[in-house]
Length: 113
Length: 111
Image 1 (cartoon, one colour):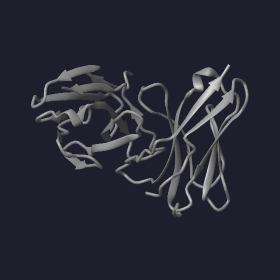
Image 2 (tube, rainbow over the protein chains, first blue to last red):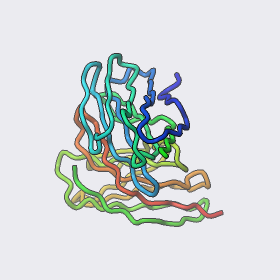
Image 3 (cartoon, each protein chain N blue to C red):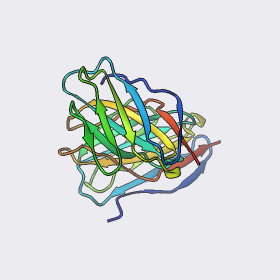
Image 4 (tube, one colour):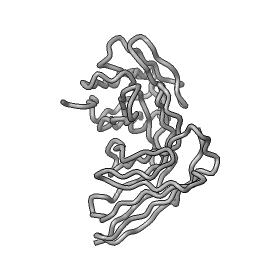
């Protein structure tokens, strides 16, 4: 059981470039989400999904797109990277019912120059 | 979701109990109290949650006051590995399951 995996671990982009952050889970969790964490701050929700084909915006969705074609994968796309998107990105997953414990991935550290 | 207030930082001697307070005076009747921690830039880790009764698991105990306006997370015998940022989060248990993190309490366990 790998839990929640994220790739890449580190990424440097130039302003205007696009990229996709990958997130996968093997626990058959319905709920998946993306958070960003800026230095000295708590995590802020970007987008989330409660099942395949269903996505919704969180607190800070601008500049990011998501899709959920399978239960296992929830990629986060940056269409045109900006320096303000320099952050650490965490993916999380959880069951819809039960304890609602969220499992977090190890994070992707993104720098936009 | 109700807002929470936590001290910015705390120290605890190794082997002693660490008591981390959280104020959630605007909590509503169907909101649960959750605790997560984040060790040195890793992904947050779930610790415990409760509604109104005190809860205990292998990691910690959660004490919620009778009026539910505050709670305390207790790590009974703190170790150096417990040095982390601890987040108190109040939320309804719905299908969306979103968490709203504040800045948490930075706990430093001192040898």
